[in-house]
Length: 412
Image 1: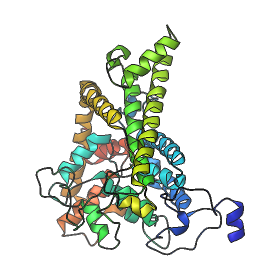
Image 2: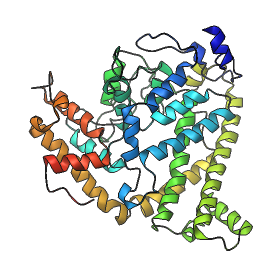
Image 3: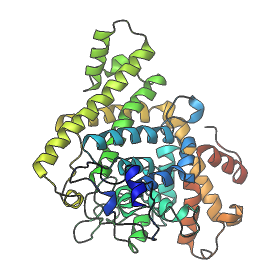
Image 4: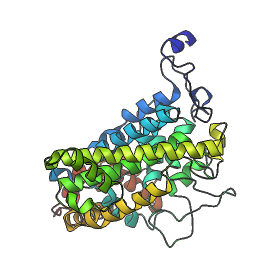
């Protein structure tokens, strides 16, 4: 086995001292024999790609519903773009690219149908039953809900991949184990861990009080870069915004000016694409420069020292962080909250809420494999099972199920 591993490049690639080393992985909850041809993180990436939840991302909304056009991002195409950027960043820092890619590919598995509209509806539906958080739902999917293997539920991913997925946005508790924020969607409630994380943490310690690895931090900032760029792209495609409205936005305005100077009179479609790729390049190069400076100052000697650094080491410079906020503010008002987006999303929220309520009122309407077993009589557990079913749906399946169960399905 060692000889095969050396021949396929699994032995001693030159990684930075602060990178996660696949040879020193903390392993899997259920022990498995190692692979002679793939590192543990390559296996994690492959398991995510072959999962049912990953395939469903192709038919889950990012911002625009699929029938709006063939070229708008879906949750899957967004995920692929995040993975490309995350891997590029990991390469620049000499990290484990496979771990960064696995985390990027898995980061949105827990999203509901209809993007954030579905998430808002699910938060309301689950408010009295432990709440809903899409990162926690991702953890439930990869540790419990995927059922592909004979020896375990979930995908049995490595500790490092689970840690990165759970701490996508940073630590969840303080050093004493106290939660840092209220459960997602319950902003006036006391601080608590999201249900899926709280449930899983009883059986495995994912170091919830520390920052995640640099590979996970690469995936997180790649998510920001990807959706800033592609939501501008999709907003322009939908004609909700125009190029000239973007000239005062930091980074974006500079990209527009450069393209127009180099290619005067360029047609709109090509102008748009030239601008988008420059936005991505500027953001990626800023992250690399700012993060290398932070790494030099912090001088972590290992991945665990990164976790204990007390702050994120991969991220934008202060200038680009301000530009990122300005872009998001603009997109929120002009794209995400535009009536063209909100009208179908209000209908989508209705679909999710009514489906959940119908299944809770009459569990016999659930498909046989999702009907309650030991959950019967326990309303919280029954609600969680319905949540798992509805949250896993694609947009089109949710519409079909609403039509079957509720009738009078709203026009999306």
